[in-house]
Image (cartoon, rainbow, N blue to C red; front, side, top):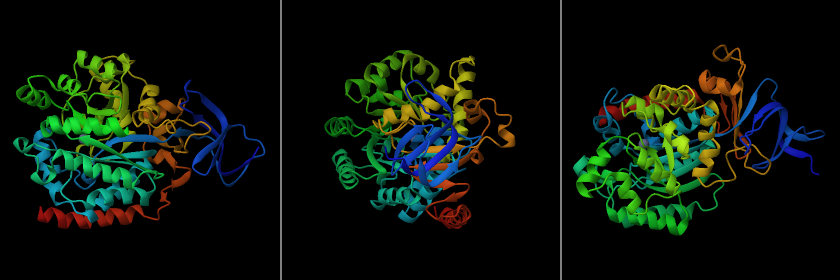
Length: 447
Ligand SMILES: [Zn+2]
């Protein structure tokens, strides 16, 4: 047996997230190339790089499956407004003026902060669709920073009635053509996947729904959509279709296991049944739902009924960061408040949402757990901080009393991309911050 690895992590507690959710004490993990080669007591193994994991824990990399990258430059705009008013004050104010160089900067902010949180997969749902350079600026920056990326064009083919910026609206066929070009360009890329997605019910015609579902049916490409973030979605479909949004989508064949439905704040009991029936994934964005006063999605009820729930931070202008660790705690607490039941959702449930459930929604059986043969996306968690001590239960500590400082090392595709404040891409956090501050002073004076 070949006992040489590229990287060995010694003597660490491993939260494997395997099918029995095994937690292995004093364990070694070997990484060869992009893959986990072995997990266990690895006697006689050698590696070019050896990390000592004593007193620390290893978790599968977290997946942030809902972000709007460009909003990383718009934090704080429209604070204390509800969704529709906030859209005008923040994303629809700054979005139409986004350039490729600003998009690169925004993506550095989101991707670098993600690595500091132990997030190894970041999804951009990009509705800033007035400039063909933006998708490439985003994808190339994900490659630069070394994070696993999902990029989705976020379509509108209508929406003037709801003040969608005209430059973001394109005919359905053109939307699919653009996505297909990206799918072909990034086929077989080690880090990048392309999905598709319709923005909101009030920005989508029947033609676009059908085109998106057909494209996904023939290619297997997953897709996403904001659904029932607020009651405006139902008001719109009742007016134009005569049925509530979930019923409308089910009739159109849009509810499938390739759909990740974002928010679902106003989802009713019988609509949860429709999600279960069709295998729809739900994306929980608790910080954003709280920030915009949208409400508490029925995540505990969905969990009970077997919906595959995954996590997102949402855009950083409605959060106001891409801090997944903060969202873990907010997500757990919101459900306990909403149901008045402290046992309605557990730390283990939340770990599932961010790891193995994310892999399922992404149709990536090669991600989501720490097992031999899986891709090596992981992070090392060090509980030795004031906020986290005493540490009786590391999983509870991660969920309820930790922060970015606990994340010591993040690996993506077998590569150490973040370690103790340093990024392997060579970018310095302070230099990125200075560049953002200077660029945004100029930008805000002009929009
Ligand atoms: Zn969103």
